[in-house]
Amino acid sequence: SRPTGIRLGRCPFLELARRHPGVTCAVHRGIMQGVLSSHRTDLRLNRLDAFVGGDHCFASLTEEARP
Image 1 (cartoon, rainbow, N blue to C red):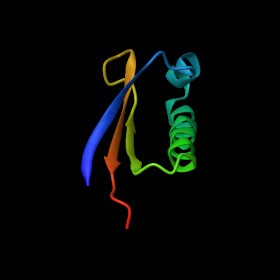
Image 2: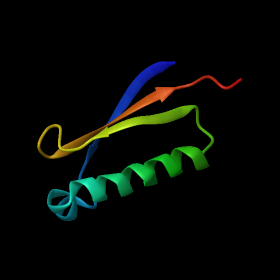
Image 3: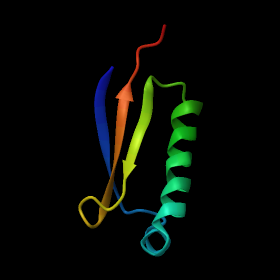
Image 4: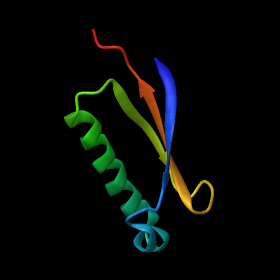
């Protein structure tokens, strides 16, 4: 597997995420996992780090080869 990631800016849930990051980021993580799963990609979401640069998040992904 090969690690990679995506810098996420302009969070659609920013105001809510700043007040309730645990719940909001869990929902965002679930949306991302659902999108990856529905597109039958080899990418898997490992972790979503909130506000790593103050104004953006970082999604850590792994590319897994299909059998």
